[in-house]
Image (cartoon, rainbow, N blue to C red; front, top):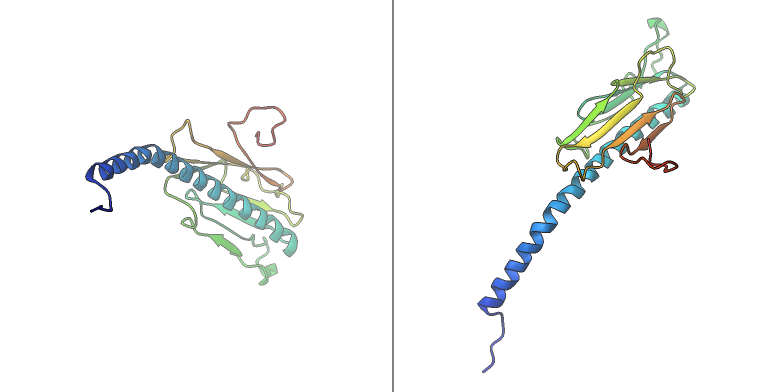
Length: 176
């Protein structure tokens, strides 16, 4: 009579092999998730900056992009100095992104300033001194040797670009 199934020794060997493979796979998976969160938050902030620039051109108005330390942002019209000239078609909040949409408590954001104003030409408003021009996004979840910190650089012309501060190769488009 022939029995079908697994012996206890086969089952124990299979479990040990799976546990060994998991010990190596789980840290790599956590690194991948952490770097993916960095990329997600970076792209969200960059998209918000681009949306603010487009809104400024489209509405022919000054638009303020405001970043919060947790990754949330909002954009809206800057009220004119003359309150009577305020345009109802340009609200104080046009769009916003919640910090918990694709973000994590492990993601850290460092910016040189928390807001920037775009002129109706889509450029950074020269009348506003010390506007946001650089944002670094990192994660405490990923070991420093494996971390992919990303940087957003906002040019005076209003163009936002993502770069990698770790890249030093001349001619590499990822270089900051």
